[in-house]
Image 1 (cartoon, each protein chain N blue to C red):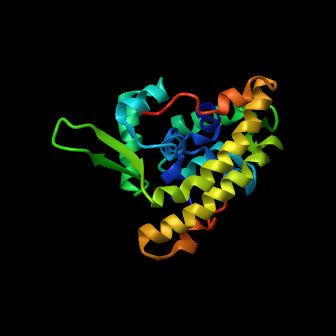
Image 2 (cartoon, each protein chain N blue to C red):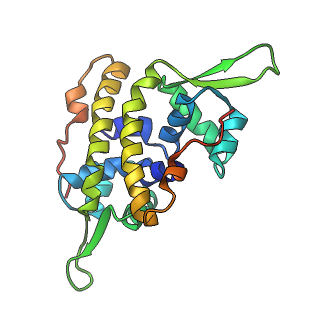
Length: 113
Length: 113
């Protein structure tokens, strides 16, 4: 059971799947979006997601062409999980913030790129 | 959004909610169940779950009476999330292990206590 949770249970994994579901991204874009995530932790989470077949790292040309990260088709199978966390999280934020600015907190206003 | 995922996105949080949904437990019981989780990480995850109101720490009597951890009523609101991860995780283990012994891997054969 713990093994199953480990695949999506890293602190940033579901967030990364959620962001990548909105579009592929460079490492720098994810890092900007995920501040204060460190480069080390981000690289680690991406590597684990890649090892589990959820995310792929695409080299777009000869070095130093940018590398982009995107969800694999298998990675989209996690979206129902992401959605269930989003639904719960929306209520959780409403509860913990006393109803303030939830729609803003949950929206994806900054482009990932 | 990341804040919402953070509440349940620690590496062990959903696993702990899942275990505690099966019954309250002492720290030592959770630690045994969660090996190789370290005491430091376990304490940290429990503290965060407690801060978010999902788990409560109950002192059962005067020191050195055992402390038990249990889900709060609010904590049970996370169970649909746990279930969606369980369903996905079952498929994921089947996929990554080539169909071997999934029911065993997903079951809760060791008592938490």
